[in-house]
Image (cartoon, rainbow, N blue to C red):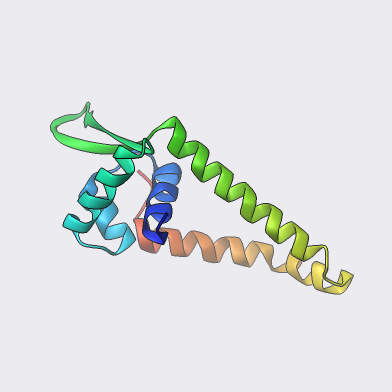
Length: 120
């Protein structure tokens, strides 16, 4: 799976259903490229398109159960990999990481807001 595909699935997992145009902006690709990407992920069973209940003219891209499972599996693999690496650090290095967590969480939130705009 491409990095853009994985990032798009993660965005849908975090933010919920989105228009293709929104996804293209968030992931930094053209709308036609995102349309192709969504079609491929749809054929793979990872996403589906649904009508927007509030605006019948709009089609939203939504995660399927398989797409959500994929995102959760990748997330857990990342957690497990970091846990193995952290186990190899010295105690003072672990303490430094723990002390930095609030700042890192804030940084991640600022980056998310910059990429996705405010939560909907």
